Length: 408
Image (tube, rainbow, N blue to C red; front, side):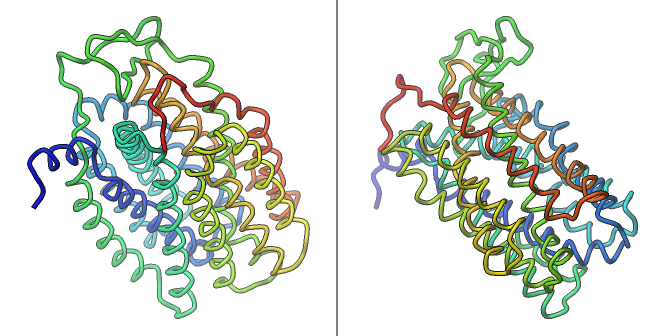
C-alpha cells in the first residue's frame, strides 16, 4: 500500500495518463468524423468550395471561445471545463451525421468548434501544469496520444466506410463511448483552479494571464512579442495539421480516383507518423533542444506535402502523408510548452498562442477550398507547404527557459 506521503505526492504531481486520455478522446472522435467527409459531402450534395465554408466554422468557433478559456480554467479548474466543453464538442460532432445542408453543417461545426476550442486549451493547461510539476518534457507525448487517437478514429472511419456502415450509426455509438471516457479521465486531473484571493491583474494589457507556476500576488505583464511569434509558429502548424485532417480524406479520392477507404488510410498514416514523432520527440528535444528540432521539422513537413501533391503515385502519397505528419509532430506541443514557460503568463498565454494558432484552421479550409475553383485540390495544398516553412525561420522563439528545472 502506498504511504500517505506518496499518495499526496502523486496527487500533487498529477497523472500524465489521465491528461493523455483526454487528448486521445479528442483526436479519436475528431478523425472518425473527418475520415467520413466524402460520405458527409455526398449526403448534403456539396461542392469542395461549399464544404470548405462549412469546415471553416470549426475554426471560427474555436477562435471565439479560446480567449476566455484562461479565465474559465482559473475559476473552475481544467477538469470541469474539459467535461462541459468536451460534451458540447462530442455532441456537435455526432449531430454532423444528420445535417441536411451546407448551412446546417456549418452551424453544427460552429458549436463543435466552440467546444473544441475550450477543451483544447483546458487540457493543454492541465498538461503544462503536470509537465512543470514533474519537471519532464511531457507535452509531445500528450499530443502523441491525440495523434494515436486520430489514427484509431481514421481507421475506424475507413472500416465503417468499407463495411458500408452509415455515419448515423457510427457517430452516436463512438460519441457515447468518448463522453464516458472523458468523464472518467478528468476525475484524475489535478486541481488547477486559482482561488479568488490569489488571482491578479495584468500590467499594461487586457490579457490578464497567470503563470501555471506563478506565485500568488505576483504581477503579470501583458502579451509579449515572443508570444505573438509563438502564435505564428502554431498558426502555420495548425494550418498544416488542419489541411491534412480536412482534405487528406478527399484529395486522393478527387484527384487520383482512389477509393474512400484508401483516402481514410492516408489520413491514418499521417496521424500515425505524427504520433510516433511525438513519442520520440520529447527525448530528442531534451537532448538537442527545441530550436534545432523545430527547424528540421518544418523542412520535413514541407517536403512531405510536396511529395504527396506533385508525384502521382499511391505509394509516394502514403510516404508524403507520413513525412507531413512526422514533420508537424512536435511543433504545436513545443509552442504550447514555450508559452507556458513565459514568466507571469501561464494559462492565458497558452490561450493566446492557441487562439492565434487556430487562425490556421480558420484560414486554411476556405483558402484551400476557394483555390480549388482554379486549381485541383492537390495543387491548392501546395500553399500549406509554404506556410509550414515558416517554422524553420521562426523556431528560435521556442527556445527553452533556462531558469526552469532541467527536464530529463
